[in-house]
Image 1 (cartoon, rainbow, N blue to C red):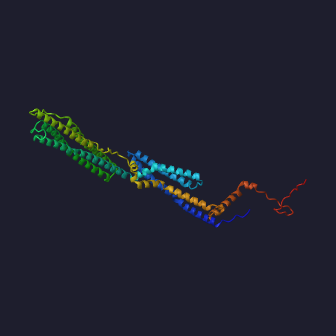
Image 2: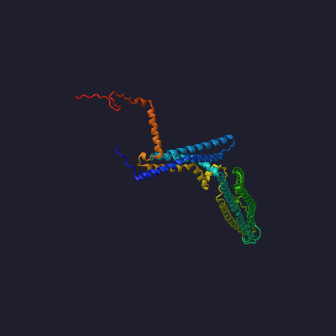
Image 3: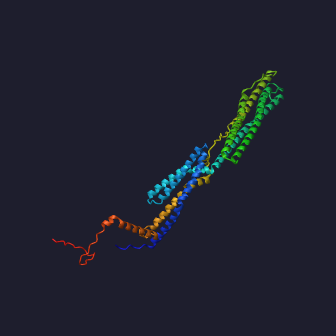
Length: 442
């Protein structure tokens, strides 16, 4: 058999490189399993805290259920990543690697679904609930301010009513002086003007009585909001604070409804509609037909002016009523796990930590796969005997000797051994071949 060609310098360097990497992997294997177990246990602990926050009952069965779930998560994470740490670096075909990558992706999604969000709830659950309380306070504050704004706009109709009332009073004074119908005194035209002026004066007074109620309701709402803001930052368990927060939210919701009902815009609209529709015409009291004709013409003009002023007042009230109302705000209690999901954008570091503790072994899988690929690349082209270390060679020789000895001692080997040939008198040695019968040629 021809002699084997010696390794090239490049192959020798590759073999040395592969041996160096294998030495590092051997050392790393001594604690990799322990590290993976610590990560799995840590994830299980935070999962237990997250599950506990979801359970309403604090009894023994709930505690046992939380412990069982967290243990199952820890075992699942440890087994899942142990499989991948062993199998993914060992496979060589692209199809096998793509399959394992798909399995790793599916498993990572399952881990996030069963563990990571609970870990995030344990890390930032209380802060997320406080964030929910703060967002609710802002919503209630916006609703209160918007409702108060609409109520103030309705109170502003008092000036419009006062202006119309004052105009009718001025007309009545002019009629008393004889500037309208030409008849001085307090006749039919004067009484019509005073009638509408009195109606508007009563409406104005009714609007004025609502102003203190609106101001008091707004002040009370601000006090409730102050207490709700304090509850969002007070020390102590957030669950207890959430109970009082819910009570204050109910009070504030009722106050906002009451403040909405204090708006006088519907009242002003109805009064404006009645202003022109309900006119009690007095009997014309002119002494002559000409004077009564002048009074009738003046009253007709007054009614036209009255209709115009009523339409103006009605439009002003409708403008107030058409203002977009405050959005309905309702406080909904929320668990820490749900709050972490709802306000995930505000707790990115907590989410990152919760996911990293579960998916960090994926980085180790990739490192091992790259290292094993480098080892195989370094040994490529080298014969098996060239890749053996001195220790491996000694172990191989010892194994060969052990196999040899075992075969020598086996009964089958003893039966197969040839019996020694006795020497004849002529002194023929043991190595002399026996008698051979010649073959006859034909």
